Length: 524
Image 1: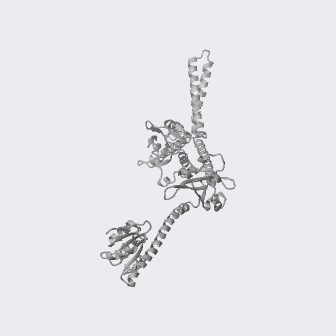
Image 2: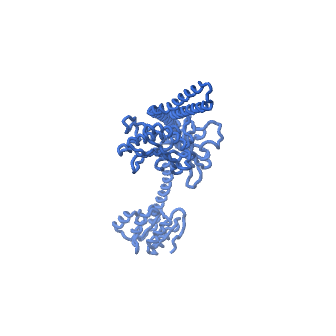
Image 3: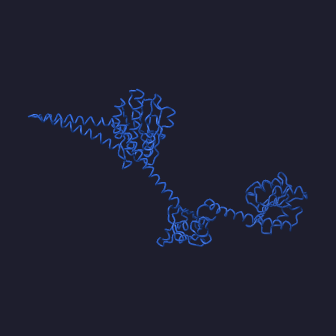
């Protein structure tokens, strides 16, 4: 039996009955009414045709073998593709319960056998019109819901709907508030003249023009836009092309917002960062002065040695010159020794001044071996005072780092001095081990390891907290300042507990030339 008997692009009607005579009567009744008619003589075939062709109306016989009309109706309503079809039951049964059951399964109507032609025609016409209207309404609702969704997603921001010439077709309340004009008065205005009416720009260079006419997505931040009263405000906007179902370009949707307050907050945040950095530098400088105060006696002794030697050599030189025939070679050697001792004193003072000064240039490319050697020389006084030693071990081919050398030296010296004091307290003769190696592609790890008294588990949790100290005369700003200084270089500082006792502190610094990459102790 032929599935499609006649075709009409407007309304499709599916006829389902296992009796060929009934199908013939229905066909003869509807064939000249302009419908596209489909026929099926059993349930499975009816379901297949309905799924493929989505008929508006289904005339469905109840009493069929294998699968009756009730089951067919139930399956039709369970399928989203056929659920909106109007099912009209056909039956010779004049049983009220049968009708109730049909309606409960989703049936829309009921026609009794034998058929009355006018009744069939009227009912099909009515249900076809209703289903057609419902489907058109659903299609329109889907379009409206799409527009409403885009609006609701950005309801706190200004939204314009523009045609291809930039004429405002829609403006939400937020846009009206930002622009300073009622939304209804914005409709019909040119977006470009309203917000960019300087007259200097070429039309094709105006913001959003490419979106309206070419479908190009645009976004800009901190662009000046005009209000209705002529004042300007910094804005951020995003423009997307407006496409209808046929994918034809019909203008643009513009979402924008006033970022004046945001820019002020960003500036305030930047000012706060600058202030914090200044305070961090000041704290670091104060910490250096404190360290130098603690080391003052040792440095006084350090400087006094070459000065005493200079005095003695000068006296010897005077006695030699008092002779009638002075030994000029010996005198020259003595004067050379005076010069060497003066250079030694000058170098000590230079190192002290370099360590104490506030950095002016900030980060620079630094040689790790040179930096650690300078730090070791600073720590010589502490080595003598604590009867300890320092061993420096450097990995071959160690790359340069990008850092502030004064601040990094301050951190390294702090860790070395702590290690020397801890070693003396443990009455150990093991030297403090200072090492540097590369870790990963982005970091250099610098480590200070001692065999001293170590760090208790209770103290470990508070090591880098401000004002926490394990020293009787400590202020508790040393390690806290160290962490702040190293994090300012783009690295971090951490602690490890060696299995054989003592303590191990290490910090990381970024390799020069890979700025912006992460450099944390986790990589070490």
